[in-house]
Image (cartoon, rainbow, N blue to C red):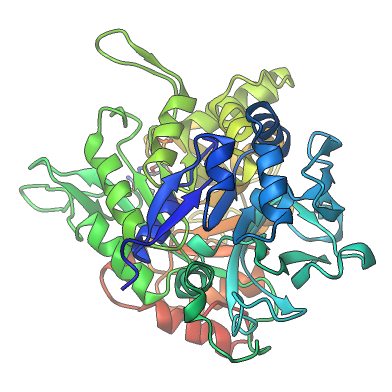
Length: 535
Ligand code: 1PR
């Protein structure tokens, strides 16, 4: 058994490495944390999961003297695995807020993806590897998707050819992994790449587990469309945290007791959806606008437990904003988000507070840097910040009836109206705001959102399909990924949304909770329709 084996982790405290810790523990290893440069030199096996921004990571390494220790360790060809930024830092320099010097061990430059050629930035999701040479830890991964989330990447060149073990295509071919001797680096996240990722980590940790087979090229060929399972969570009247699900955001049974609908336990369902093949799992604390999440320890507990066994990305939303508690203690939204990240979230999602920030920004045209959205994305990166939009369709006789972006609807309204706008709401759909989904989406993209979770109150829980008009409007308006949400009732609704709009992912709740349509059926259907998915 591998229990008792130890791996050294270089975590300089810049962000969430809980997922990686969980994956290492899951594989039966103990973790020793690097405290001083000596610990690096004494490591038997070192994992370096870079998180945060390139410049601040380099700062910490230089200030602590760990940069020199890392150079020595790697030059001596000792077992090393760099993940994401932990790979990028090995290069000569990065253009991220730079140029900023890196460790200079691998020839090449880290630059930003170019979104002008139609590829959305950040690059988020499950993409395919083109294996360049035997990398030992990647064997048989060529036909599978692995999970990427980043805006910067290093490019292959003649100078770094001896290092590059695989590339990935996203607009251009960038470096997905490197290997020389015992030194490995991956741009994707093995700890978030399901079974495939766990076996990559296992092969790094346990050289004996490496087989003899050569990597094979296979089915995975490009960025897959994601299928996301969403758990709306709240405390019911008995005080238990339950997964609930509304009809147009009404989550109460229409009985005399009027209780909150209970569809299961959050941790169990998350684990089930992971096994069923969900590409991501989202938790939305739907009463977060009234409750204070740091006072809501059960929700943090849910995240901690779920992340121990779920090795795909976890998003959590609800209540991410500044807060002053009953004792007068002030919590910044950054503190709230940090607590979620520390508890196992890979991304956080902001609803109401992002709507207020967008309204303010549209009014003043000034980025104050003070909104939760701006603060959290500055520290954790855009790719860690999702904005959740809760719009409601408002029909209009004429496109000029409102100052917001209107569309010509595919199906006329109840009084024959041919136009509509999508009014944003806050507080779980309870309050309409003077801003449209279109305006909000564009504003939050500028303020630093990395992704948009696009709900639709009219369609929520109806099972009649996604609001294609809305999803088209928003996914064409922004260059960050858009997650289509609300209304999935059958497998055809997923192929429809991916064929008719530029959504990068589709999210559903009710059909999965009620076991009407399994995730695998959705994926098999998409595959049959020629839409790339992770199987
Ligand atoms: O405003 O930052 O505290 O965040 C609150 C979060 O909670 C927002 O993301 C908001 O969308 C969500 N929320 C608030 N109230 C409700 C409610 O239902 N009463 N749920 C709610 C949002 C929408 C989706 C749902 C899809 C798919 N639920 O998450 O899962 O519509 O459902 P379906 O497949 O069954 O149609 P803040």
